[in-house]
Image 1 (cartoon, rainbow, N blue to C red):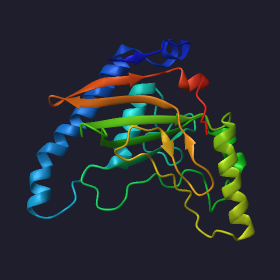
Image 2: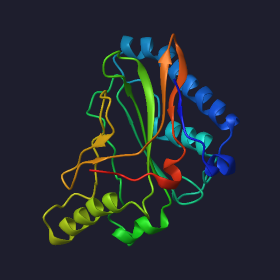
Image 3: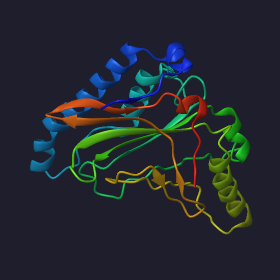
Length: 220
């Protein structure tokens, strides 16, 4: 069952073709995973699905926001970024890394003012059925008070020397039916933008809420 809320931004940025392209891309990712997995297992190597690159393409397909081509910079032409994690056959604990800027001149809360969206893409499994799925959350970084509060706290702790790491990590709900991400500076529930699950070997849209691009906010 698709949970769908129509919104003007869908008309401006998204169409049925965007949804179709997204599902096709996710299916390609899954099919490639199935094809390469026997060889990765045979030779005891990780499966080579570049989660970061796949995530960028999937978010572009879904939203219509273009990337930068071969140029360096943000992940998308409007200044938005994406963070990715893949739990399928993961060796380490998957998490979202580098969620706010650090170690550059832009490493302050002000860097969030020029980033329209921060997307989080995770491949994991449904809690009770173990269905493979892909979920996408989104934060409107200039507007989200709760997210900015934990980011501000993290920057303050770095400035005071309480923490020395330059990696602002968020721990997602791996293989759990939850939208809560955890961090030492605060746990928040993040707006779920999109979810698709594998059913009989094919991806099916389970949840899609484009309203979060205009109205979504993190909550405690």
